[in-house]
View (spheres, rainbow, N blue to C red):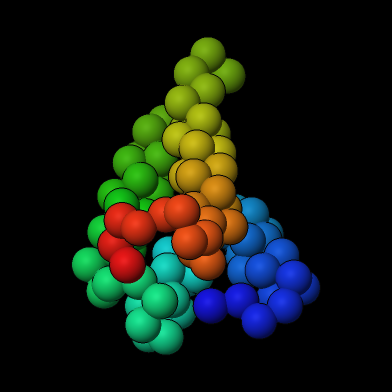
Length: 94
């Protein structure tokens, strides 16, 4: 999937820079390139829509920081999984 280290860094930073709104993009691109099976990309798209929908439906208040925590969790998980797309040790979904 990644031809250079710079490409890997850019794809890993996509979920971080977009604040989670493009968290599924690296997985859709990997599915198009046949690096992973399409169901993995579909799971990420559905999870992203559900998580962002839930995060936006929670009322924002200083007493309940759940909204930010859910989005930070989405960003961290998507960036970590994007970093492992080329790993030979990971075989789930390939």
